[in-house]
Image (cartoon, rainbow, N blue to C red; front, side):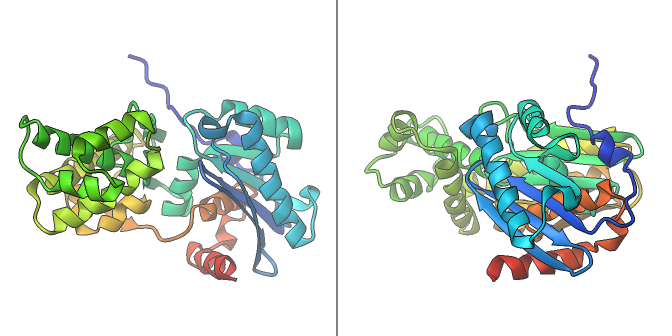
Length: 340
């Protein structure tokens, strides 16, 4: 089977054009529930934010997604008191299984200079500072991307019906399935059934199953149940613990594939981004075990920077000013701006 990369760095990032005088950068994080834009003044070290609704094409369609992206960008530009022509680079990181129609529509509205990437590319930048390594998202969904001497590679990102292994949704839906197997005596006993009834406000686990199909429950609602699975696992529920072990191992398999395909060796970062990792060692220990078996030099860290930071780092890369933007400083600027 021919296996070309599923996601590649755009030419503007793989072979950036240095702009030594570039002062303003635009980064956008577009998701299924909201869109956040940030304009960074590299000289003044100030940030200006803009907010809009969802911009995941899978959730709202291309037209609404592009409108949200441009609305958020416009608000951030207005806050900075500049126009789009003042930007040194603009990078829009958008969640979704396919970004091609977003790319076409953004280019039609703003030109070739506005770079659209899948959100996993921005996650990689957040995790590695735009240098060789791997970024692994495990939030509501999951996705892994890395770059190294062998090029760039993505695994996962197939959505909740065909993938999302190790994500909050995967953990949530597998937990409900385990509760149903307990109910019909085809699987081991677990406290997940009682937990699901309480969490979803149902009298029986059968009613939870009906709710999944008849309401139906959203991806976010199912993913939220993973927090209850974590509580049960911490209290020693063997089935709940087994789900975290299996989910972490499956995601670790994807990370290992990226490491191999990207030609990464020696010491390099593997950054973990997303709410699923809040389960702590319950999740991190089996994930760490799997990844280190494939790459003993991997430095596995949970990334705290908000996702829009990755878009800003990519924008700095695009205009050759990555050395002017330390991830630690950027994280502090973003934290301050978000609480202001």
